Image (cartoon, rainbow, N blue to C red; front, side, top):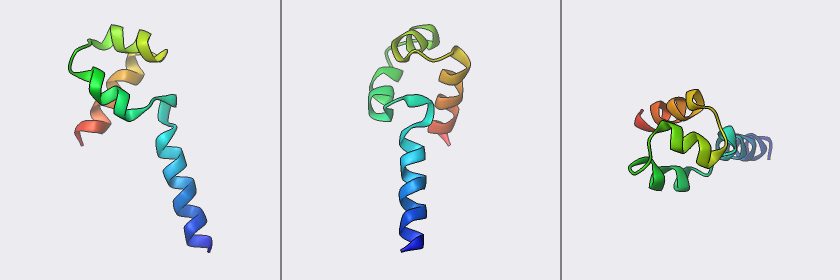
Length: 57
């Protein structure tokens, strides 16, 4: 039971990283530049760059 709670918490934290939907981010990543992405998702340009780095790993 405890392990299940930890896993659920970890999954929820991953979904809320910068409050961005990753599926939407992946779809728009190829067509938009960093400035447009930051405006679209209401996050900083630095956050966009960090998300891209995390996705490439």
